[in-house]
Image (tube, rainbow, N blue to C red; front, top):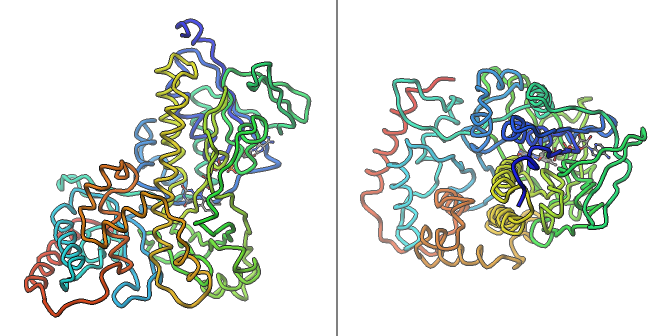
Length: 494
Ligand SMILES: Cc1cc2nc3c(=O)[nH]c(=O)nc-3n(C[C@H](O)[C@H](O)[C@H](O)COP(=O)(O)OP(=O)(O)OC[C@H]3O[C@@H](n4cnc5c(N)ncnc54)[C@H](O)[C@@H]3O)c2cc1C
């Protein structure tokens, strides 16, 4: 076990200055700088950052809260907007399921959610009911009306919301904050890595001939996975068996006068397109599978959707490594961000995982006296999170009912489902107790029953044949829901 004075001499070297690198620098500096740790971050301006990743889950709020940074400071600096949730358009061809909204949990929705669950459970029991989640959530209505999820002070409810932001500006903002906390910033390109006799990383060497040693190396080198994957040879487990998308295109478009407060995910021929509202522009992109569609075809389809066929706006083409490393923390190296793995951005979960990884690591390293004692437990925890997120994303694809391309049929017909996902679908269609199942399998740590109900009912996953029995109070219950939702929205502003 490390003594307190030995802990004081810890040197941390973060390699990579994308969002992951600067988030790591800020959190580690906030936790350890005052204990005398030395934290350096090296990044290569020649390589640059990936420059996408502009939507978050509600978790990001706790990152800024922990650092004591107010929305009024960081949001304007990053052209950020509020996110009530995600609207999924065109993923299902079932009548009534052309579009649905996946909300974030908020205090306001407890009552109406009970009605939503009740309606779904009736329908799972083959009784006619109204089951599109959009109608039941205040956040869905706020999004439709382009209202912010910020309740006035005299309206004491806790709202759940995420953000949209410019990833380049967020990097600059976090860099300045980290430097203000004492993190040293070095612009250099790492050319090679030296291991010691124990197989740990001893030093990294720059193209300029400088050598940097550290006790802990934090690999934030993006998809190149320079330290953990390349130097320490930690294997990468691909998720390509059931997540087919491996490519993306990103391009901006002009913002409308009233800025939206939701992400829109629209099904395309061979994937899906995101639309993310920032203060000054929209971020758009198409995530697709290169096995089904060429980059040119994808760009044509995206430009057609955006009305930018004749525009000279540049499209950026990107490849994605979808999967995760076998271990996120190995020897004296922690991988954070794209270097540890990536699941396509359908639910904007990447920075959420970055945060979980960093918080989990900080706890595990500190509680273990700055040794590797908690390494295995930590790796299992992060791997479970990756699998939990993957299952939810795979569910979007297996539940689609599109018939227009081989891509959608292949996504629906494969049977590479985890035991957890199989159990969720079986429980849902057999009208079992979904909430208990999620809890028993620890799956509610990643997605709450609300999210599963929204997804499964949003895609119309119900028994096909409905008897003529009608739940008579349906319209009455829905009127109460509509009135409640409308009354709540009066308290929110654009
Ligand atoms: C299409 C797409 C859409 C996405 N959408 C979302 C989203 O909506 N929400 C979300 O949370 N996430 C999203 N992500 C993920 C998100 O972009 C990343 O998680 C986030 O930007 C963090 O990236 P990073 O810092 O790990 O890597 P990068 O931004 O790639 O940074 C890597 C850093 O390492 C440095 N580097 C690399 N090699 C060397 C070297 N040899 N020497 C020195 N420095 C080096 C680079 O210079 C750079 O600074 C998306 C990703 C993709 C591909």
